[in-house]
Length: 292
Length: 338
Image (cartoon, rainbow over all chains, first blue to last red; front, side):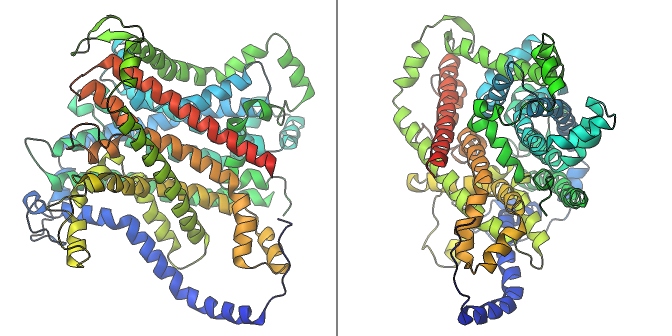
């Protein structure tokens, strides 16, 4: 920081800066539009494909816009009991996994950040190694384990799997947050007669809210989008999550591209809403903290 | 402004700074944040310490051992076992499975693909995300909308995005070919997923596309964690914008960069749906990475060998472990050089 070279501000540069200040009002939103389009583009194709009959999706020559507009797809999908079942599973699995991860990760992260004990390093290392495993690489082992426990085809099996594989990231991120809070804050709470648990819930958690929020959104998104384990462990169609369920719209026997894409769009919406909602919380956490 | 709480309440970007400490050196970081109070230290050094620790860490340990370590042990067991083509355990195999993987004729191709896939996707993702994050940190009309738009590829499941891209890349019906031919960039359609020259590049593009949102989000948080007065001081000192970026922003963004690149290496290496879905109709292992290679060994190849697949899975875990440890070591070494 201290190495910045001193240079006399050139008048030329200042003039250029004024011009830029005026131009950026128009340039930045335009660049923003281009960036947004780059990331939304494929999903715009998805929306357009959900609004045309399946036969129109696979017809040459291809067209940008539907040849015939079919507005009924979304209604059809939302009225489909199978789809509603999958949606219910996804909501249940993602919400439960997120709650479990927060409940389990917060005490672990807090304790490792605050105390030294035999095995602390080993625990943190274990967490780091866990992060490197993907459920995909362990799916054979997972299936055998849950088969022995008679948990194949249960919500519990995928909830536990999602919780376990997202725990590492949550512990990792929360550990950092707890470490960064000065001990004096806690000591003050202690002097005021706050218990260890009370300090955690009343003092530390509010201060680390952005960390908790980050853990929540990461876990929720990962659980919402998990595919391989659910594919292997959920055999009952009514209990499948969205990711696995909606692929049955396009199989060797029937190709409902329109429904596949409509269902996909509906599956994205809850996550985007969650993010929009949580981003606000992030900002609020920031301003609330700076009052101190 | 010199509030001691600032680091704590900043956006998650401040997190990586501390969060990487245990990653880079679990031993070294232990000294930095010891017990908060003397009294507690004494209790912890007594016989109860391990029980107190178990109380707080118990649920986490239960989950990790029950759902990660136990299946991993099962995987190791499978790697040393012989299986029939239907997945029935026939008996011990010794190290045959490992030898079979190492002697597999497609292994060099698969390893080369993995290196290209991980290096190119992670490097370009980090570069693009830096630019995107820098842009999103600016204040402009519609910033919120752009932020939400960028979340979409992250929020959409990889399977769905991969399926969508098979449609976009399609030789006959694909939107990309429609755009390219309409704009006369190419004379005819390109078989993005069937032509060997294009397959890897097409997969890499999707890989970057789905990795940028998360990475950019980490960088935005990292940028927000840099206090404004640092920039103000630099401006008063007359630093130009590129100097500020090179000398202040990038070094202070380092912790976020470490977290983003380590997580990206892990995710991209372990990425299954993209390579599997986009490469679905090509036979053999010409465009597979080690993860899809492993899966195909068990479920799709002529061999259908669970034991060999498990052995490949163990190689995968060891490989990613080595890559991450070497990466973190190199960073630490660089830090000491500075």
